[in-house]
Length: 199
Image 1 (cartoon, rainbow, N blue to C red):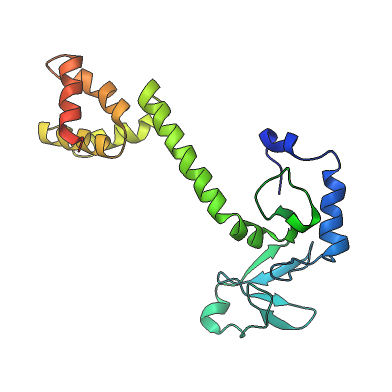
Image 2 (cartoon, rainbow, N blue to C red):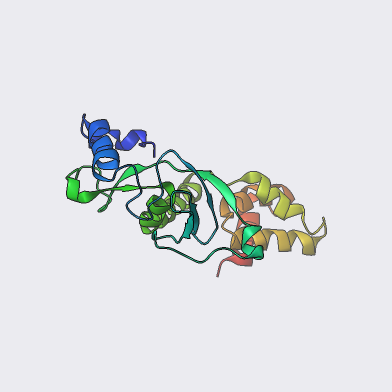
């Protein structure tokens, strides 16, 4: 997997050699999670089963023999190219001991990092929302306008659109777009928007 530019300085200078040693010398070019071979194209199913052409059998997500797919499963078979990566077991790119590194394919690497990715996504969403609350962005203004016009131009429709914007977290757009439609001025219009939908 490519290294993010902001994390590149946590990796040692000889990281390509360390990664190559883990993936090919220690693991022998096979995923240490499921046994998929590096650089090969394989047939796989959404539940993690994949076809091992060397043994002529299907294997599950842990590399153990699995049942053959039935007709319904066979319709979901897709072709994927396997690429091994050296994964950090403790998610710390500065800890490059061989005990902390494991050769994993894309699927096993994503499953291993799932909790880390979910936490990073949560932090990213919270930061975006905080920036939007502070500086009137980076919410998508097109979605706010679509919400505004979704119920027509009646007063009831406008109130419904404003309520949807506020409940969906589009508070800055609600303030911004309420001013032209409010007859009482921008401050009173913004106050009405907040009164409509803030729990």
